Length: 569
Image 1: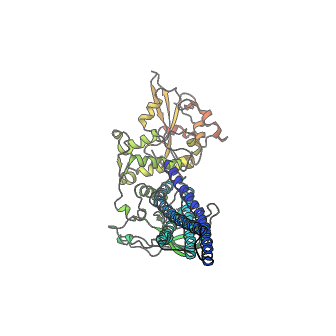
Image 2 (image 1 turned 180 degrees about the vertical axis):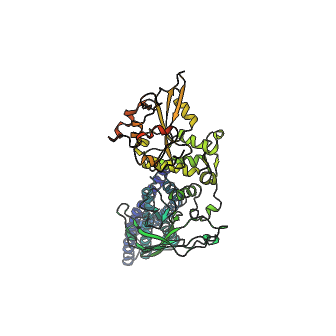
Image 3 (image 1 turned 120 degrees about the vertical axis):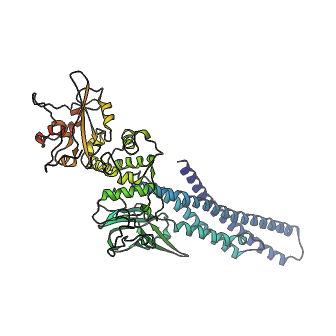
């Protein structure tokens, strides 16, 4: 915020200084006109008088003073223009070397679930004000030239530095416009709006836009889209695929209603492979590891200037029927570790990432598709699984790609697969009670026992399965033995297959156990820490009874699914 306020202050100073120059040029023009009238009048008087008089001497002294004032005013105007251009250059340097890269980094994080308020409108405002000021200075220098043409003299301040200021103003304006083209919306399939940068051979959308809003730019230029243009890195890896677009690759940039700037959205493009690839097992990257670049080119034709613009999207993964969750793992890792959009060979040797960064991104995966992020307890459980309890969730500890993607949760399955399956479970099958905070989520068995040990009998909690290859929710409750000791019991995981048939609140409501001697009872009385079951879940109950019938008892020894196979643990 401090940096934003400081930049706002500098931009306002630039606008104010340019407005003051406008006023000073008007004063200069009036002064020059008055001086011109006075000098011509004095010349006429000199011709009609044969000798000098006191009146003519006073007139001459007045003219000399007026010339001095005129010269000072000219010096002041040209100095003010130079100072304004210096300020504009400083602001532009900040915009292009700091603010624009930081915005691109925020957008990059937003693509993988981070905060979506990337402040593009603020950036557009700064770009536009600087462009307007540079344009106004350019017109002011034209006015200065008109004044010079009407009247000049030796060592005229307006002529000494004007050509250099002209070049500086034009160069700054051209550089600003050249860098004002951005990718407002990164490539994304409409069917998966939360999974940018993963494309299948179906239609996808991508949008570019200018950050400068000027009437002179409304010429409706054409933008052209390319894939992998000018990047030969992939040719060094045997078997990498080549692609082309189906659909029109040209789009007219028109005024965007929301921003007022020129923009073009490509909505009906499809990626196709140009030719079958001969993939080499020794050298080739996998389909998920191949990164491809989508880029754009356009040209702005202005009254005195022609500017070429280009911009490149973040790398995309192109699938042919592959699993989107796997590809999304690659997109996450790349964008966590790499800010170079052209590093297409990243996955030949992917670097590690710090746990502090990975934990934040994992939390984003849940907050971006539900209303609830992962809390510190859940993240600590994940850290223990990846790093071991002895690391104590050290934010500086390094996680390697193979550990995250190909390595292990407790069962030897991929850690990322385990995370994603529960992410999908929370998003699609139990969104309401997940958003309510009723599912503790990632929790170790040891921590689970510690939470329930001192609670009333019948207190239960909901957590994700520790070793579930397909994702599942385990119900764990506490009982008291005859000796009064706490006994913790758990169901097997309720998987997507189960929750597609019956809602979890209904399962909790109708859950019963029986030891064969007594009537079946529901042991689930209080949701941890002490919420009565029906208070927590009553609004989600449906009138239908438990469609799984007598399957509840089987949960204690292994749930049988319709096809007769055992549920994932």
